[in-house]
Image 1 (tube, one colour):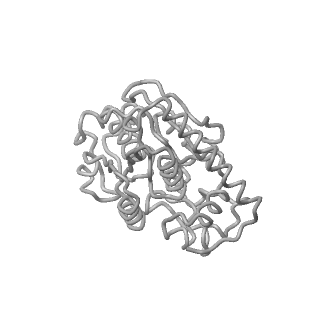
Image 2 (cartoon, rainbow, N blue to C red):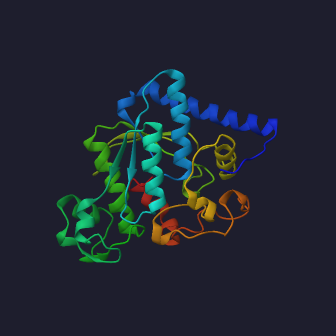
Image 3 (cartoon, rainbow, N blue to C red):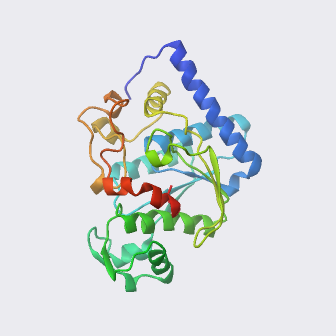
Length: 279
């Protein structure tokens, strides 16, 4: 891991931001027990920092670390999977994996394979109707509109319902995406069609992308090696592109789009996806 030299003022800024995040964790655990909560951990830089701060907080308070939950959308980088397995083991994280096995089976676990809606189970067919999809088939793509809903949102909602999860911690930031720019630190989600009631906590909203990397490098927090190769934002393997040939933290973070390498039709429909329960 590269070393980073920061001045005393900058180090204080980062410590203040970490302290603010710990306040959010405190507020959450004042309302919910550890067993009622989950850390959403994708293996990316933001969710890994969220987990690292929560782990620090729990050690300081002498409480158990919440379980973590990751979603395997069927199009993952092997480097991300390795990151999750390695640090779940090294950090003692109990990690649950979520997959929409019904859709994967219908697609024969093959990207771009045609999925027949009639071959899906009742829940997935109902979810497809909920998003206004009225075709008889669709190609399996993890980052398409229907793919995002089935492979992520449906998996998330099913998981929290089946496991009686009351609150989740998300590694989202205000500066990451326009649809998230006005997010509150916590949000109570009311029960709706196919969506169980729960509360979403966002402990690192106030971090910028530069804050993420300064904190990660200064405190020696692990990160996926793909960031060293020029990726700034990691999603599905086939639709995430490098932004540059230099490491993410050496790029012009302040004047270029962080998610420019992600699939842009998804980015344009982010607000609609979030109305359906996407994170």
